[in-house]
Length: 168
Image 1: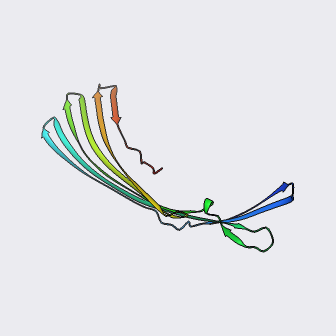
Image 2: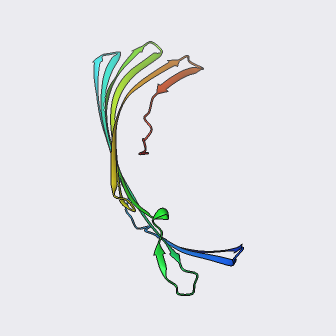
Image 3: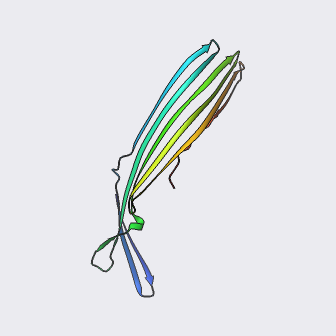
């Protein structure tokens, strides 16, 4: 992607013009992989247990270069590091948990608990070379109550979710 910008302003020394050219890579690939495995086993006629494992991975990158074009007519270009960057981010999450479900008459009750471990890593290669990484652990409870009253049903559900963190 190319972006050209020309700005003119009136200063005490006369008209001042600034021109910049910005180029970015749109072809930088982003990838995401997510998988889930669930195992359910009956304990009694009215109850069962469920075990779950979820894996999520993603990678994204961006690259942007900005050059200032001289207004003196020479057309010389100077790279502007304050408006340029190259960055790659990787995210990975492992989530494991279990739930217990019990049914009694017209009432179905489910209670679950999962632990999620998330890691995020960022690498900047321009204008500075630096990297950072952070790992988070979260406990995620869940509950579900369903009651079948014939003509009217009641469903109450509570789930907790982890938000994808960012590197600051």
